[in-house]
Length: 315
Image (cartoon, rainbow, N blue to C red; front, side, top):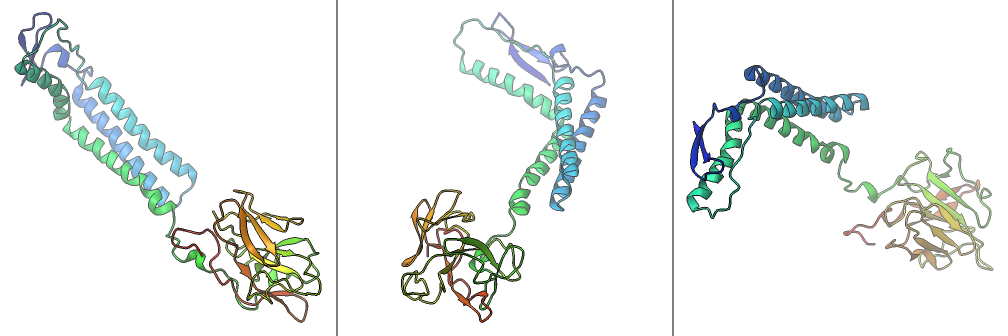
């Protein structure tokens, strides 16, 4: 096999054999170096496979780091060794004198350039296959986060909480909330009994002074009994991005989400409707009652999904 090019400075074609000096490799023992590169590629392949297995079983960060490091180390060392010791040393040059090439000369130049890479690939098909296998394994492993880390689809996960009829309101320590625990103007984060600390069930309990002559606060028609003695309970999960509602502004009677500054009006005739910020809908309200022992309990679960509003759920 030979490669045809232009003889430098003369513009005339010259045939260069593949055993010419510029096509020789730097390795004194090319076959031995080829096996060395193959071993490093196999090591990289094993490292990527090990990383995938460790990631899948949720192994410690130590094994994740070791396996991924071995994979990249093997791949990197092999590619550097291939380029340094198994690629033609050159030099490759061609004339720079001014000329208008013919179509035949253009074809010859293109053939000259393409043949250089082709010769290297054809000579090292074994290494090319191993390199391709290592790259393919890493490509598959790189997709693991879409399967392993993101978890299952939410589906109906946010459609219901653990609140149910007659649930006790409890604090984070599990103790029941008594009617005397919160003063007017105060607030408290509460949960259903048995789910203290639950992310979806967390609820903001606030207490306002009822209107003169009234014992309950009516936030909306049909909710005449939901807020006994000024106690109102709203989902603490913001309807924008799901952040926890963290503040209650006593003077303005507003709940504030600190993430994106959504404000919700609460009080008589105000059912936590958003008045500022990106939240698209009111916070769901939990209907309450006070039992014979003075403990606050839920009349029923939330009557609508809690949390963010998606494109398919606006209400």
